[in-house]
Image (cartoon, rainbow, N blue to C red):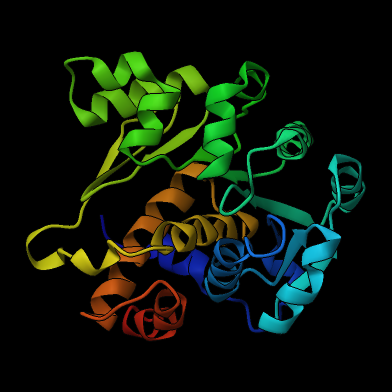
Length: 276
């Protein structure tokens, strides 16, 4: 894919707008020592243009996160009740959860509350594991969700499709129809699928090969890019497609030696190159 004129227009910010015109993304984090992935996602959401980004974390993790963050805000989320209270604010219009979240009963309830709030929601990493384990979470998926599995997570979510003798786009499309939401199936040939549409294949091969993306945390950044774009008003499918493209462009901009922290900070140069 490429950035078509409509996508470029959507990425640009109005000169007369303010931060709430560009969305408020909420990234949920795990406890002390588990916040790095959420911080990567939060910075990615902010860099891609969300007007505000908040990390919701257990109270015990507030100091750790505060020591590492400036523009990203913090809110204590001890349990599902506090998350429900936070989501009373309808200006929070993009939710990302999974990176470093955890797999205990608290996290099951957090995913449940987030899904039932029916905001644009990105589910990655631990959230995908919980959805694979808890049928009620799978049933709660809705059209404003994006699932971002790698091959192993896809096999846990959709074991029959992973084992079927069909192409990767066919498997992703069948999964999207079953889940009722968008799927971004990661890989060198990333596939984006959504119900009632044709899948899109984003291949990072040949001149667009970016092997440096095989580094810890790059998937967390991708989840943050998608969350930020959905907070800005992109549809789930468009957010996933655009994020996948920009993720590779940022890696190509940096080149060898890339670590995940570098990806969001490459976006300004990528945006300038495309006239955003």
